Length: 333
Image (cartoon, rainbow, N blue to C red; front, side, top):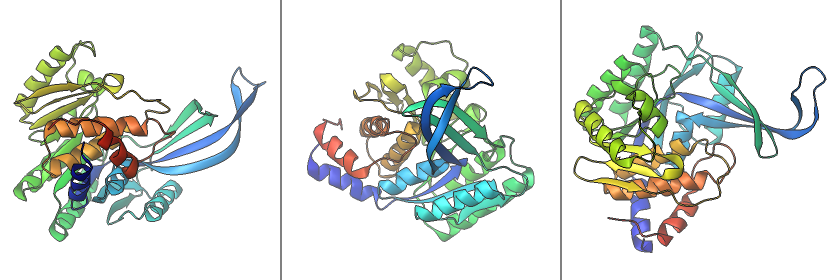
């Protein structure tokens, strides 16, 4: 891709404001060394030498948007607990707005703690409340969204659903109606619980596992034709504009009802796949908001997802690295 065109794309990204709605969390990492087996049970003992907290879930999508030059505003709910305090501190540290963050006395802040020996993950411990928010809490969340949309000009709303309960079917319907009345685009990164509740979205981006489970399909990941046929049928039923399915090591499939394309993955040294989906939805959403072609959306998102898999842990995309890599490959128009 020509240097000038790459710069034009990133310039468009820098003019986009995105409202991110979804499940935010803390990704916590504990690094250490395994040098013996416990006498209490046949399990390894990890002697911890370093610990780090990072923003995860919808907050990591916001970080990716920020890294690409866009202006994200995150709407989510965390617990009124110590872990929630850590989350708020991480937001401030990364210069992300807290205007859409609500605190709840009845919910626990989601924390995923990964314990690693070197680069090998030994175990993951999840602390969370996965129940749907109450009707009263939903009203508070929607009112905050309404206020933010009235105060700021957003080009796109991105639903980031991790099945942790912030996104309900009613909230989806209310936000979709509001966004469409304002001419705001809608992108979705779904999970199983709400998979069939998103209608009339401009971009719907499941991974293969979510797609297969959501539609109760018995299809092989390599059967691209069957996947595309099922995707097009679902797209018509839900009145979706673009459906974009990530296939991990097999790349991505995208369909806008006119064109259907499969793009293989870029060959990379994979260190950690966690967080790649956050990067893909962020890049794809910005391409959508910038009015870029679907082929370009798929290839740039595919490239970005591969790049973050080279890094350990959940990290946002390195904007400069993406620019450099994008110049090396021929991206279809």
